[in-house]
Length: 168
Image (cartoon, rainbow, N blue to C red; front, side, top):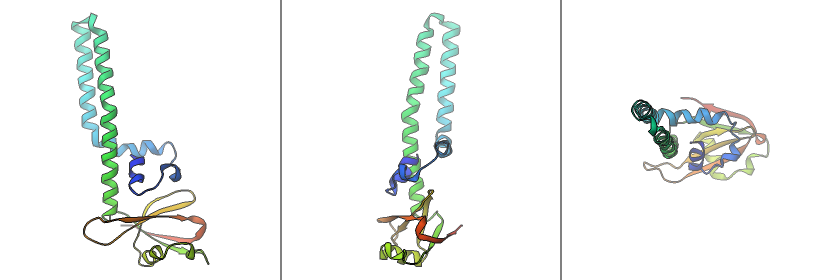
């Protein structure tokens, strides 16, 4: 999930420096999206197991193979669900469901950033993607009805005096 979410904005997952346990937090949106399918697969595996052990004791190996097959089917299902969910959430952010951020720069550091970035910052049009230990990842969505191209910026914390985040 996290890989595809950040990939949508052109941000490397390595640069975000996500702690390992966050992957479990990010996986919640995927698991909640496919929980009914998972429950269905567990019920089918359980039925196969009990049916085969009660009536076909010699077919126990077939039961185990069926359960392994069901588990292996879960992997691509969860992969596709994670990719779809990440892309949907990235699109929601691009449509405006995200916190705005405005930066106040230290003396002489603002000139390090592109003119378009500084104009978007002045107009409070930058949207926060995430924060890492040493940087902010923000994007600017060009105005228009359709989602045209957007710009992602990597802002160093050492250049910032204050970052103002507007919550909705």
